[in-house]
Image (cartoon, rainbow, N blue to C red; front, side, top):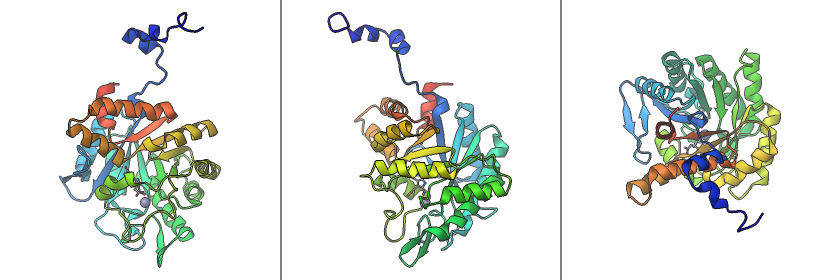
Length: 324
Ligand code: PBG
Ligand code: ZN
């Protein structure tokens, strides 16, 4: 049927009609809130490039987690800022490391909130790389055991899910095996499968104090120019036992989300990263655009592209707008 018999505008005449034919419905269930844990008490250090976000001591972090749960957000993902860094990133897998403490506090405060932990070494190594450093090169295989030990220590602290973000080859299998050997076969792995070497991580690295001290992450994170390679990366992680596949960043990589949605039947996550958040916040502060509308449009687009869940610094604001 063609115009004038068919008129697409008929179904856009009222909000009720638009709702009936809406293909994508963003809900609070889709959101995962990232939080930054730091040592000490009653600490709330503003992160200037991420308005509304702070490095939180555990007391405040537990409060934030409570608020997120009250708004219907199903999960948080925790990042840690340790008080000491060393070449081996020892505090990443310490029993009383900052993330391990944060996990215990959140699980005690809000047992029904899912706690995901980011598994990586870059916040904990003095060189700021996600893996072990041998001279100027990153030693993939020497890193795997430390990543697996980090994941295990998070599970022992009570984490509901672990999310390796390091992009070392073979880490999903290593983590899966060590978890299974230690009776944590029920803990899922959310793999940062297609994680690109992106300048959009800038605000996060300032927030988490995790910028590499030499070189960059191009030998382990993906080249932004590649798409077919994302399928290979995701396929490997699935074979190694990943339960959820992630694409990161989200907005400049909607095509990757779409492709992986077509290629795999695992749940798909997208990380709406720090720089994507900061850009919208900055433009809104300048009154150059409507921050709330752009937020909802962006999150809806990520879901429309195929993401089942979105890690986003907008989670609390979006939950307020969406209700539950
Ligand atoms: C650590 C990690 C990073 C992010 C999540 N985990 C930074 C990086 O890889 O440099 C980025 C998150 C964001 O920008 O919001 N590997
Ligand atoms: Zn890292």
